Image (tube, rainbow, N blue to C red; front, side, top):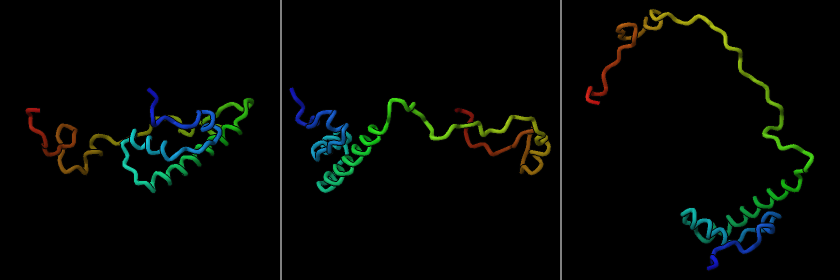
Length: 115
């Protein structure tokens, strides 16, 4: 049984920049459970058509002899090397604490023991 909401154009037509129809936008909206007004359907059909055209133009530019890349510029490690540096002693860390117990910050209990 053919789907009454199936895309009207072939995949090649849409990939080459064919416009998306208002009915296709309405079908996608139903699948996505989006409630769109009539004017939104027309507006989105135009926008989605522009996106499909832009993707088709990018695909035309992509040549076989150009390897795919994830970044336009080569990446280098920007992290500093790990080196041990002196830190606070437990006494220094707890010096300004309102309360301490057994070299730990003491805070008010917020949960019962039953958990």
